[in-house]
Length: 460
Image 1 (cartoon, rainbow, N blue to C red):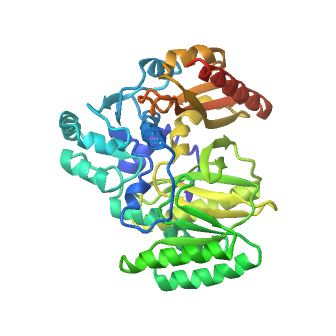
Image 2: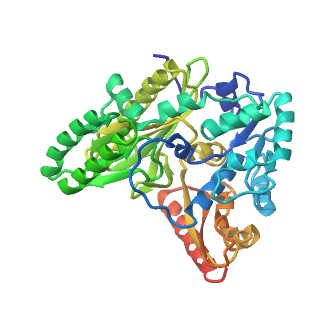
């Protein structure tokens, strides 16, 4: 196992550290691509659980592509579905953040991820060919066959492992097997890649359910609360068993699921480390993840961990990173973990070997949070009747924006208006990064932002 490099040991900002990890050269120009929910591509052809999608939700998620502005330097490039609001770019510049060269596609489909839109833009593909000739590399949120196709078409080298490896190490089945092999504590559970394994897992899980314990059935590539079923009755467990067995029988017997015991928690954790091409593992941070019904809502940090708990997290990062490096992976890795009510940790619930929401917060964390300060990264839900210009949002929030060490940084505004267009009221999100000198002040700032945005909804 390689030694773990601590958070500040390299003396470089995140952009240069990332380039060093991905390419070996901190000066390599990168083309960032925010293809969020790449898991949907990895899940193609895999058995899935029944799910519902909220109207307009896909359009909003696809505009999370604008987060790719944050880790980029002024020398880098970012591909987006639509031009950013110029006033929002000014907001970032005024805060001293570098703004890269932005390339918006000629025509976007709200239901497509950004990679599909780029592939459908011949003129932009020509621009990317020129960038490839100048030494740039593609740095996507995660790698699927779509991003590989984009590299093939443009000649841009991929600053990441290939799609097949990325899919393999992002499977929840991989996470569970890795935790077993590394001796990391995890909830009682089973992996299911065949009908026989499913039968055995359901039989064992039935005993837990009959004893009054919930279990969860997880798709290998589910994300953001999708692809997961919480089961608290034998009847429902048996119904899922029959459905999955029947689907598997119709598709050659293949499947990829995890069944686990439901465990109580004090807090959800997310920690990040970066695996370099030379197998060095660098620990970046650990944060408290804010979730609602399994859906990610944001992060609060620093996480409330004692020295022993932090040691468990850092040791786990080193072990997982070395395992991923041995399998050929390099790049950013986020791990979901859990603190039980008694303070014990389950340090590996899921490996996300790709960028994570907290990845995009890291440049803001480095620039805007000082010693002893607390921060919150989250989104505020909006209900609008017309598109909201950033200038109006800024005017309403002006005295709450970051200044002199505290306040709000609006880190994605594209999601506010992503679902507009039908003439009907629509839902949006305003993403923000909040910094304060105490937990109480942070809570008060968050509440005031919510109140003002709610007031805007009545008039927008």
